[in-house]
Image (cartoon, rainbow, N blue to C red; front, side, top):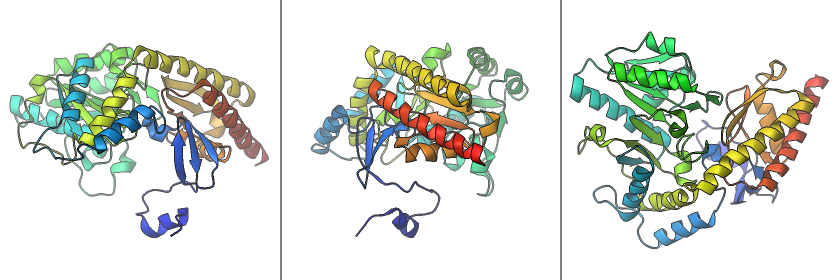
Amino acid sequence: MPVTRALFNDVMVPNYNPAAIIPVRGEGSRVWDQEGREYVDFAGGIAVNCLGHCHPAMVKALTEQANKLWHLSNVMTNEPALRLAKKLTDATFAERVYFANSGAEANEAALKLARRWALDKFGESKNQIIAFYKGFHGRTFFTVTVGGQAAYSDGFGPKPGAIEHVVYNDLASLEAVISDSTCAVMIEPLQGEGGVVPADREFLAGVRALCDKHNALLIFDEVQTGFGRTGSLYAYEQCGVTPDILATAKALGGGFPIGAMLTTAAIAEHLKVGTHGSTYGGNPLACAVSEAVFDVVNTPEVLAGVKHREQLFKQALAAINEKYNVFEEVRGQGLLLGAALTEAYKGKARDFLVAAAEEGLMVLVAGTEVVRFTPSLIISESDITEGMARFEKAVAKVVSAQQAS
């Protein structure tokens, strides 16, 4: 049976609208489609493929584990899960780990833990969760409601209650809402889906102080910023602020589905046996792959290399912008970067994405006004150069079309 893009419309729920191309093979930061056409990958599966495609260490770990043990459920534990949890706790503020399958599930666990912690310690009245407009925390009903984009949560009936939203990078906005009834504040240290907007260092320090003042937990959603993406294992290390709970996923498995919630021993105690769970969470295959990814990413060479590549991307984008004047600014950290479009091109981010694909380059958008780049953390300098040459052609095409209209 021929597999074509048309088949998608016949067999899949239409909640996605995938591109016409169907990739079939990847190696490093290059991808090939069904027709054998090659693409440079600046998208990284939305900040997931942190070691590119088919990295030898990941292939080896998966192959070896596939010949040992696939699944047990959490009726029993397993060696890869325990080894990975030990590495995560040794490398972070955390003392305890809960494994899930995705960022949404990791955030769901974080939110449920915060509510249970508050109930146990302070009673039923301490249940308010505060998050930020334009934030994104996943697609479960709880996490999508906590996310500050109503368009994603509207239309599904009554929403979970006691959730408030305030303005990102505006401490006064948070101060006006937070109280002793607040159980947790959830924040991305750098908003990804919301436009690649970094939090000000002073703002995060103020958020931490307000949480401490009102006995509220600070939850960092590092699903997109975590696991080397910003040039440290987790972005909180660069913020001068330590959260009480941290959610991680995406790059954690390098392309194999896995998520995790990290926290302290004292807070973790409130998820007692039976209060939360996941059939696949801590799966031996996922944890074995993630352990291999960890061993590559959590090294001085790779983390320093992220900051070096950040500069290469910013220099190349600045050179393109000198010619075409399409970007208002390039923002972000490490290899989570966003090129915000000028007034003349606002609302046309997807035009740049489509034009890039036509030139053999995979990029992302963050809303309608930002072109986003989340490539492999170890993408070669030659692939950056080639990808940017293709991106310049795409920009030229969009500019030409704009001028023609």
